[in-house]
Length: 516
Image (cartoon, rainbow, N blue to C red; front, side, top):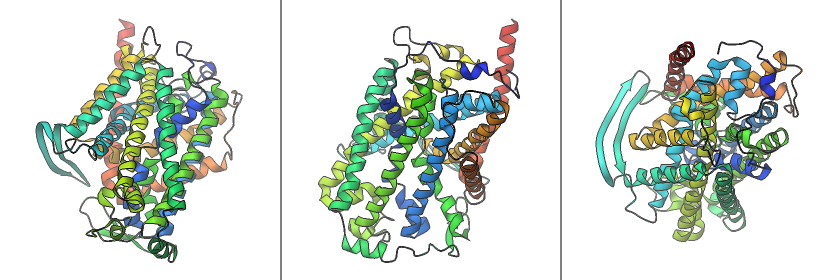
């Protein structure tokens, strides 16, 4: 498994014949959309609003995210059509930059990116289930193991969490277990669940947008937001950012603040690449993979931007943290940052809030299913390369699903639910997620040079300009986060770098086993 500067072209054309080709264009597109739409779009605009203090910059933050997401999808489309194999991004990094980089991505994906996201989204399901059943709560403990105090480590603060089983994370664990079992029954079963829930939650988000424009217009909010839409949005404007945890406040420019707030909007739009993990099970992948990436990301980003215009149409951006009503609290201080729920409550009262809670439960359930289905394919591909437990490379004898990989992923995810660390891990890994996007799109340039004659059924639109612009923007965001949000960046780097000695140990162990 040594690094090769020019891997054999035959690897590009290889397939995973043992997997069932069960995903058509509809299923692939719903996997893209379903993995993207979770709970973030209904929540993070509150924090973005507080940081930018400008209606125009709130929209601009989502437009930046939208541009990067769609350009990323256009670039990945070429790689997906060129290498339609289980594992997706792991394979692209392995083939373009070498096996070490593929392993580091898979290692980080398993440790926190995929499993941490599944855990957080699953527990978010429990959080909104508690709206209807108050007994489902993070404070209703079944087994409280320990309270870990905050521990400052340089620019980071670790700990500050409760470890144990409460009714809220129990709901999340049950969702993970149920959907893991569903996906063991094969990709067609998982895809059917994904199609139903993605269509349902996309319809709910579309309904929010439609109702927000049709009947939700609030004269006070419109006057406050659009009457002074461009406030604090000039390039010369200064914005306050707290450096690190409990650190000093720094004044930064408009471009810098837009980079800082991408922590929320980019992560809310992430996981669009998950369809590439299931490439070995996509019908006509050379056509359907790039098409599903573009269609899925394009539709979701359109809905995300439209939803934020609805928020501005219904609620003022400014408000008071102690406001007695939804309108008085505005977008910035929506209760527990649940902007989507606040908008529906403003339009339809408590009935609207209940409907939004149901919609978010549907959204989180479908999101978990897509993440569970896709993530297991990466560890399966790693195991086939001898870089993960050998048993993970086995398929269910009847359903031809990576059953062991699904179970291993499910067990670790459930432990993250119990640990209480998943929210921190999600924050910590954002920087690393962007690093791997930069490396993968950089790999597109490498493969154009090292494999100029490889079959490319689809070529990245706008190459080389758009992929290069993406890399420049992503590097700028990562540099800004290193400077102003060290609590998010250094832990991510540490997790990635810990994978290097693990890779060499795993590689040496595999070599020793082969020699024996």
